[in-house]
Length: 483
Image (cartoon, rainbow, N blue to C red):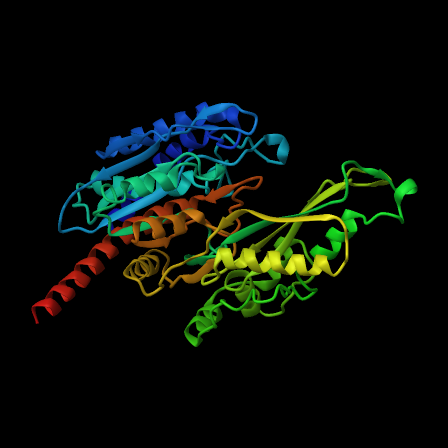
């Protein structure tokens, strides 16, 4: 209660800090704003140093843009606070760079001026990810301000290039695995959202993503459809046939073998879906569509999270501007992706896609050239909901919000969770504090005052719970060893 009272009493201070951070246009996507990202990293480092943490800004060198320009990469913050051997060590990952935002994009307020309206704090980065990073820091600061013993040792990994692909981060994790991460027990990431606007959630999995280009080339130049239409094998017709062969009208992927590795649904997992709070009608309205492929909550969530899906994203090389241009394009590139799930192997998926498309193409007897490539492949991530991390977070959520959380997966791809899990071999958990309507990456991004402040309490309660459970776990283990 003392901790919660302190957090309530210092709401205005916490919001002031968030306003200062949101004011920095730390857009990592646009090269001309790289200096602002650097400034944001310095602010974050200073904030950790003020906690008493040891802060190391690790240089990642530079990278070359497609236009040949070379830019420095923002340093990654590696911070440490506390080295009590009796305490577990919890590492928090977050990022302080943001997606691009302009008022004229459709924002109701200046995206870089944190503005409170009806209990909502609007601003770019408010929920993704400056708000959660500050909430964690505020929770640590609360223990320090109240002169309470820290229940855990803290480590921080904060980067400034997440929105641009976390360039250089994986290499750094590998280099630091035997040193910085050697004594880390648990890793917590708070960089996603609840499924509901009101009910808290814990995320235990995400799908991967395999992106494909399928290129069909006819000749060296575009042709006039009046002069050549009807006498050449048009590449766009070939491409449309290829794309049409990938998935049927029910959403079922038609590539042979693609479902072979998908794990069977267990009764224990099915029950998790039954308990989830999810308004199908609200979700449909938010999407702006008239009908989903499935009619029940369970089927929708299963196909969004734990089954693969295939989406076609576009065609490069075809005429797409207003009006009519009677041209036969010489080369077209279809772009699609497969959101793959645990147990699906990227190399196997690529082989299945290539063989399928080559088989369909051969049946057309087309003289055109076919090329299939996979320029990007990100693996799925899955955690154990019975892990001590999830038990501690569940207890903390019950303490703060008075109810058990939804256990959810994410239909999109969260490379950083898989990256930390694979490199460090530590327990990783996604602990979101933003509501479903927070609008990350969108216009009018926000975090509600309620979620920001209660999220700070959640992190503080989690520190206490993971400390207790960790000690119990090790005491039990020690007793069993003696016996």
